[in-house]
Amino acid sequence: MRAFNNPTTQRQSGFTLIEILIALAIFAVMSLIAFRGLSTMVDTKIRLDAETTHWRDMTLVLGRFDDDVTQVLSRSWRDSGGVTQPPVEGNAQPDNPDWPLLQLVRANRDQEPIHVGYRLKDGRLEMMQWDSLDQAPRTVPQIHVMFDHVERFEVSFMDSATNWQSKWPVAGSADVLPRAVRIVIQQTGQGPVTRIFALP
Image (cartoon, rainbow, N blue to C red):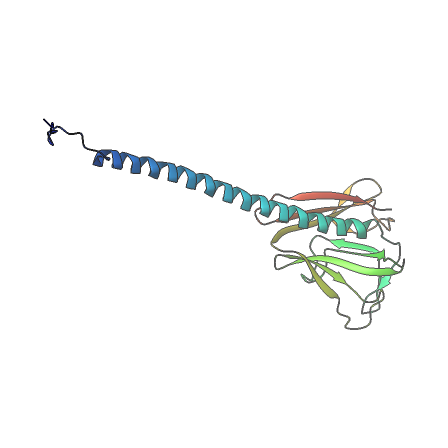
């Protein structure tokens, strides 16, 4: 005689509602942990990329200063008014805000003297380059933006007594060229970078 199972005592298959809710809660927690980990990785990569870009650009700018300062020539030049100017000139607080904080005469690749300058204007570090050493009236230099978001650009000069001067030439001094030039550059959100370049 065939035996019949009692449906009331037969074990039910599948998941209960409590088990499903627990599984969903665990999945939600694991998803949140994974999202936070991914978000941290993305934020870290963005910061690292920004730091890499900052130091790459800073290295290029400092390399340009090194090229200019280490190839300074002891050669005076005449401005657009016909006034003779020294081979190296700098002023921490120039009378004209458009005037460079540092300007100098250096040798180009053909060993010809050229006149270049640097200024901070509207948060940009700019290089100024004149087509000729002795300027004609109303001569306008070419402007090249070297660095954006710059909040600090300072230049100082070491004299023959190894003292740092904020202005060059030093009044009453016989020094034509400084022994070294110190550059301080700071971008917004970054610490200041200081470099000292010895003159030849």
